[in-house]
Image (cartoon, rainbow, N blue to C red; front, top):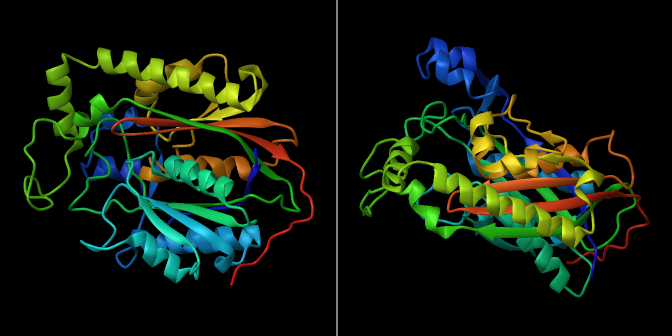
Length: 348
């Protein structure tokens, strides 16, 4: 099978931040609620900043780090969970235009918080089907501005931070050390889509029912109908456990050979609800403290951590786990490899 490599990566976070202490002082959340988040601060986009333009910055930085010409990119996948600044358009095409990826096919990916992982899966499949050597870019960006979204209390046990991520994949081997994609597997449990719909009737226009998105309301209705969270926890943990085993099998890597597993940037309670099987017997890392949950961006932000982890030695392997409402979960396994002379045919 053709080898897919991560040749560039970037995370762009807005300069502005908001601490959990500030959120408590402003009565956005209670001290009890804050204690369960596991977050010290989140990054906040400025008044003139928006999600697509944050993505532009992340993509440009990732292409520079990869030394890949924008017009050599043949596929661009863009994941997001929330509003992109216009009501009826394609933000993926905007980002492609602003970054000069004019030969890429832009695709917007709406798989909730699994958008970055879904993009990586689609992009790697695209590269394996491509005969000439080239590159694909996957990016995410979300900005959770009020009044439409309450980042601190709009959802249970989750603080939402603004930010963009970008990853450059290639079917050629770069000159520098890099990560090779050994496996990428996904699984879904679509019967849980109602968790983000609840008992609400379908609306004719956005925010017709509520001025701000209220994830707590739909979850309350869902779990009330389900008689609690036990059934979801049982199915989710089983699905993720089987997914993880399948990804390790595809990668031909044992669990005890992994240097670590990177988990979504969610609170301890949410991780325990779904990802408990991965917390035993592995070095599990959650990087939520300084960013909060990045919407569709957790997976690629975590991959960026592995890309820039100097302690990860050549031959070392890591796993990245993602998930999003609906539900879909993705597990990918990567190995750090030495580089060789690149052979990139530039497209014009």
